Image: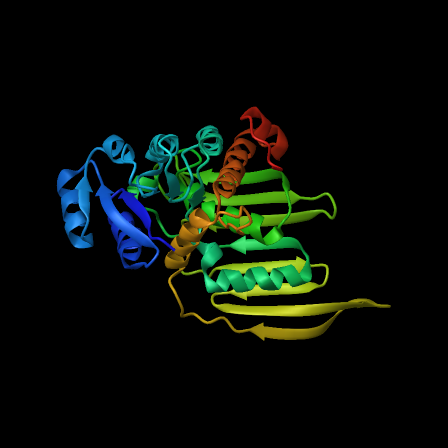
Length: 345
């Protein structure tokens, strides 16, 4: 496969350490340029990665030789940069959350479709061996109920913004996506309680409890909780299914198979699932998947973490904000329709 001629936009620590070096080392990419408004930062990054430094993203996107861009800037700039990129015919990989709000995410999805380009969002958890094992086990039990707790410490000031892209709604973008991915069916409605000003002196969400209802055949529900005061509490997932249960805490994973007899449900087998903590870095796997997705010409490639997945996670975040603010259940089809988006396809 020919290497994908790629540029990195955003030379901050996440861009360089999280993506730049991995792109440079990959046999699927030709990292030809890096771009940042800070001229010195761009120059230093280019020297470290052995490529060209650019400060004008418009000129960069005008180059026909560049096929794809990886955007790792502050979320508020994702939409502007990505829209310009897809309209220039570039494939895009964006850090999460996809954009700063649902309206801009839907606009980006439509623009990419019209331009005939492909895009993905950086949901690395889908490529992590622990989460892939969790997904495999969940598929065997037909989950009807999910409890997800992934706690967060105090976030840096740059993340402490109000809205769907700030605070825990930024952090939990991953968790909303994992809940949708594990349940595997269309979400229907959201009810949420969000806290602000509990751990920080900002309007950012710093405590979060979100219930996502799926169904109705059968009725399913996922509950995502997180807090900036939850330092030291291990991540935990509990899935209750028609055919058994799956529990995951820390790096431990266990599946219990249930049987239904005359006296009701009973435990028939409990198995510890071994997960190799080593192996390739999930971001490296995401990069490879992105390149393979772009190079696929059959239209049958099983793409993961697409732009639509990014929109759906933002839909949950926006619904959580609206639900908490109005103390109401938010119907997701109605919220999506307000933005010209069809949740089901």
